[in-house]
Image (cartoon, rainbow, N blue to C red; front, side, top):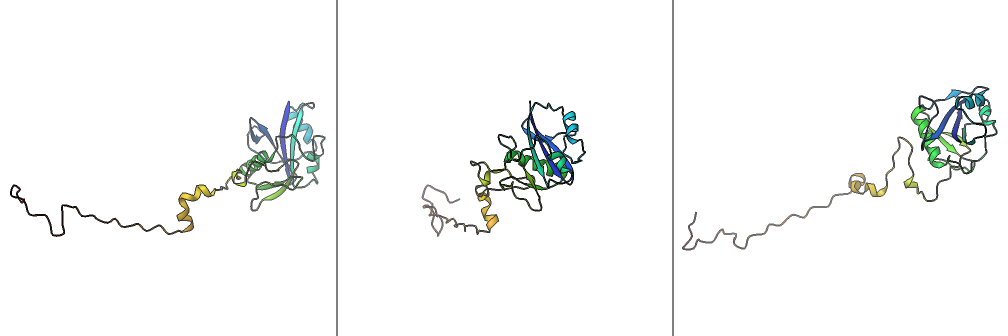
Length: 200
């Protein structure tokens, strides 16, 4: 059994999220992330509530504002690693974590890992530290990255149809269509009717 949880620590509170069925979600029955006070028996309560097998493989990511006070209760565990390797908690998953916290808790964070890599920068975001690897995938360009909830990016190609409206470029003047006269008509009017025709 593999247990995949992330523990977010701030203001002496903890929010526990898990990766399940291909997505990051809250670990409670309400399926909504929330921060709770950290008790002295946090790990005993956690293992009992989530039925954690002590012999199971634990892929735990930690995110913290600092390692002081009650935060140390959660961080003081044999399952804490300074840096994660071969973990599902990569750049994309941690971006999902941040999006869940912003959506459910109205809290805006940015994460920094052990190598100084960060998620997408956000204005007015609180910087937290993590043991997850936030290195950008080599094959992913900046324009291909998924922005955080509420922020949208556009590529240059998608803006081409609206270039004139955005940059205020003048529209090309239309060339007036020249009228052509019929070969049968002249500026003086129609020819005289022949003998067999009637001028109606």
